[in-house]
Length: 403
Image (tube, rainbow, N blue to C red):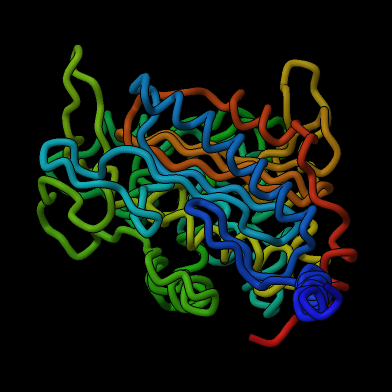
């Protein structure tokens, strides 16, 4: 009897030792669909990641089934890409499915890249926050407007789109230089004197892009490509540039097209003359590239910490009628500690980018329909702490294992 049990017992103990050793080893990837990790995790952390991802996936699946959502989702936490989701079509007529590499027009989310371009030049000593815009664009007819005021929407300048709708021939593309010429020629009254109030205005970021062009001697799209997109490996990101066109192309062919509802039917948005302007909009990107951008912000890859902190510092005095504040290219949630965000709406695109920097959580949603769910779903996801990961230091202290 003892002889018959000898080898099974030995085999049992060998298997137990192997199991215990393997349970202590940390895996460097997690292969379930929709879940992505780029570092090692404990077993408990992997369970939390899986449940967090399943929770987010369930929300957007329900929205997608009701035809409320068409787009891509990215959620990252503690420096780890936890979830990406793709729902619906890039082309509704051809039924071409979206991908994580599908590039969307970011609309006003583009402003964070304009602000970063200015911060890069500031660190290189090529401008100062309190410099007058007339140092770089001497023909601009408004005095006392500084770089800082443009960044924080405190210049008081009027809206260039309103001026263009009235004074520009819409059969031809409008460029940044054309915008400057319109202000020189017509000199519309500002809303208030510089630094005497806050007014979110696209004109500010158009002028900032023009300042970047004047200083660098490059078109704004090329500057951003060489100084931001290429260094970060954002290979599917670009700024749409129509400046070389004498006529307006019917549709924007790079990237995903935007759609709007005509009654019950989805219709592809046509191109228009305002798409020739850069700085306030015009960036195309995807959730994979924006994850790289998000990590670069945490790692101070493009500018130093002291410079980057200004982007997330409130730029306007508190005012009871205004819910949130504004930094350099970011809205700042006053009711929460260290939470910044930006939304974007433009010609069939609705986008959301929210960063809780204290909890190190980011959620990004890109859509190519003019109607869809609001931001409350995303804030609820960030505020749900059920499956939060532990401190970053605890995760980073886990040794990597060899493959």
